[in-house]
Image 1 (cartoon, one colour):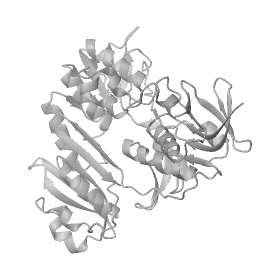
Image 2 (image 1 turned 180 degrees about the horizontal axis):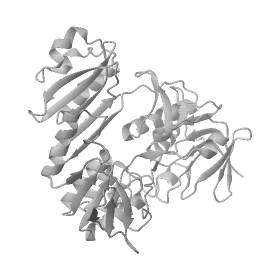
Image 3 (image 1 turned 60 degrees about the horizontal axis):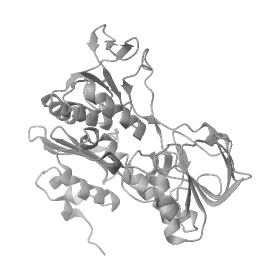
Image 4 (image 1 turned 135 degrees about the horizontal axis):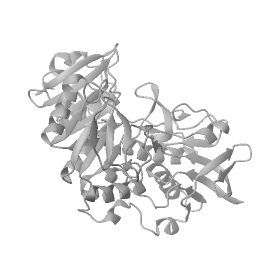
Length: 414
């Protein structure tokens, strides 16, 4: 049985950053990273960028570490292996190949998987997802010959895939269940603004529609909609969210919900076990609730904090997470908790007529989150306002003025 002081399950940004953090602090400790993918650390952000898909940049630019990084830093690196069992009593993790690894401290940075599309025929070649590098390879190959594409799901991935497909000259139809894009996360004016950009870029949008069946004998040829209409399709991009397969983790006695539950120090309920990245459902000190985020920046900082805490520090995670996307001449950004809950006031900056709109969610006199369409200049100051717990009552009249400089609200640096 192999033994290591620090065992990290997950070779993505959270796991790799944790390994880096530990090694920077301790040159002697044994570190072992296990990844279910066959590749060294790469950028998931780049996977959805047109320059990568359309092969305008070298393929190898997706890799963020050299082939020798693990060896040079004395990090044991097991690729292409799933962890399938955990025994906290004996402090061992079992891999799919039967190998067991004993640990002193364990980090579960498992990431998430793309949610599978459950319709008849969805197992046909040509039905694609975008979560891993292998997924990206399939999409790169498919885009080269595709003539008609269907995009399922209207989130960030769906938006970016529509942009990429249109840049590749592929006829593209976006199919959504909702009355407008990103309902109810966005209000209708914001959703319609993004729709205008999509349609201007040549994307057709079908509202309140689902695909009933994928047609084709050996590969995707058509889709049959719930209204009976049949559309040509030789490529289908599915972006309907993610899920975390946590059966083996829960079986070990670790408390799980949608993700692995953790406190603000990223500690699970089991001693000497931490979690980080997309799989972590952690106590957010700023929003005062447990949240789970699929976000690169969030996962990077998680990895650093988890690594330090595994080494005995007691450092809480405190950061406002944000998302951005750009395409079809439009920029979209979210920061903090963007849910428009009934107890929240919503302040608007800008308007669809100005082609730029920010929605600020306020609870008990403090900003909880914001959505921005073509107003990314608001992103940094609003993120800081959330982080600094600023009471906005004195500035309430000015906030709805799109010309008002939000930076004037910020507390001075000390």
